[in-house]
Structures are given as structure tokens and as C-alpha cells.
Amino acid sequence: MKWLDEMPWHLLILGSLTLGLAPFVPEPHLFEKIGMLADGTLAKPIDIFDLLMHGAFPALLIAKSIREASQTRPQQ
Image (cartoon, rainbow, N blue to C red; front, side):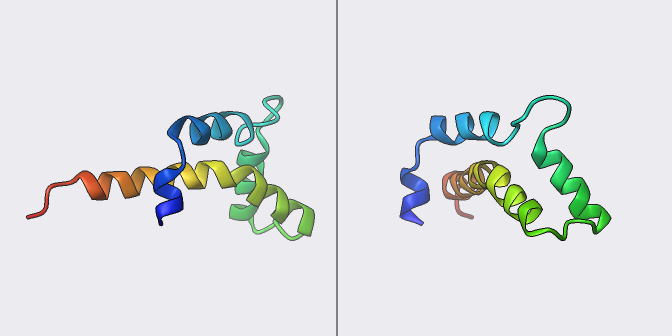
């Protein structure tokens, strides 16, 4: 996972705030698509693509955070 370690934090944060939350009004697509997934109505290919596109940066940011936390934790 060297590629994730080398990915800059500022890129992931900026991507999560812009693409992850776009469009800002009336509701971010990511929240809408997660709601559709929870309701079981996420069936159209365009909606699935939308979820993947808007969720990519937040997912990478979470993965990098978990990886960093697990690497910096002292071994027992």
C-alpha cells in the first residue's frame, strides 16, 4: 500500500470536501446515495457510479487515516 502512503493528505482532504460533498445544495450526492443504499433503492448503474465517484476520496481518506494510526501505534 505504498501508493496510499505516498498520497498527500491535502489532496485527500480537498477531494473529500469538494467532490465528496458536491453538490452542496440541496443535499450532497454522497449522502443521498448512502441513503438510497440503506433503503435498498440503489439499483440504477448511474446511481452506483455516482456513489463510487463521490465516495472515492472520503474512502481513501479513511483508509489512509486507519493505516497511519495503525503504523504509529506502539507495539505491545
